[in-house]
Length: 331
Ligand code: WQD
Image (cartoon, protein in one colour):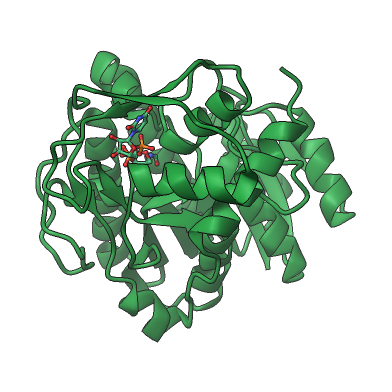
C-alpha cells in the first residue's frame, strides 16, 4: 500500500517508516521539522535502500497538504505529527490545541476528499487519566492531567465521530504506553531538542556525562519501590504494532493499547540500564513531578487477539539499544 506518514522523521514515525518499507509498503513523509532533523531522511533512505518522497510541510496547512494528496493516491495515512511534551503543553495549551486538533482535522478532511479510507492515529495512554492499571481499551476516558493528553482524547473523539458518520472509513486509534529504545543500527532513536522531558533520554545523557545526575521524581508512590511504574515498549515493537494495525484495518473505529502489559519502576529501569551497559547513572530522589501518576501499564490482550501483535523486546534490549544510539550522537 502507499502510505502517507505525517511526522515521519520523528522518533516513532521514523521507526515505523522502516517497518512499513520492510513489509513492501510505499511511504511518503510529511514533517515540518519542528521536533525532527532533516538528516533522519538520509539515514532512513540508507537503511531502507529506498528513495522516500518528503515534504517539509505543516499538516495544519490545508493548501500545502492538498498538493501532496493531488500528487499521490494514498491507500492510507499514519498520523504521528503533533506536539507531545506534557510539561510544555501546560505552559502553551493554545499551541497544543491548535496544532494537534487542526492537523488531525485537516488530514481527515483531505482523506475524505480523496477517498483515502485507512487512517491510523497516534494516541497515548495518557487519555486514560489516573485510572487503575492494567488499562483496557473499553475503559471510559477520564479527564487527563494535561492539555497534551486532552488533545489526544479530543482527536480520538473527532475520528470516532467521523468514522461513525462515514462507514467507508477504517480507523485505528493506537494508545502508546512508554516507547523507548532505538533501531539496532544505532542510527535513529529518541533525540529530543534540549533537556529531555522523558526518562530514558535523560538516563542516556547522564550515563554519557552530558547531564550530571538524574532527578527521580518521588519515591513515595504506592509502588514496588516507591518510584513511578510505567509500561515501557521498545520503539521497534511499537512501529511493528502500527504496521499490524494498518494491515488488519477493517471498516469502523478500532482502539488498541500498544504496550507490553508489564510495569517497570524508575529504579528498576536505572538498575537494568547500568547492568546491561556497564555504566553508572547517578541519581537523586527529589519531589514528585506535577501531573505524574504512580502506575500506568496496559492490558495488551486486545492487540494480541485482533492484530496478532505482541511486543517481543524486553527492558534489557531497550536499554542496550537506547545506549547504542546515544553513543552514536555527537555532543
Ligand atoms: C516516566 C517515569 C516519571 C523523567 C509521558 C507522556 C506520554 C508519552 C511518554 C508522548 C515517571 C519518571 C521521568 C525524569 C523521572 N509522551 N521520571 N525523572 O510521564 O510516563 O509519559 O511521556 O507520547 O504520553 O505522558 O514518561 O518518561 O516522562 O516518565 O523520575 O527526569 O519516569 O516520574 O514515573 P510519562 P516519562
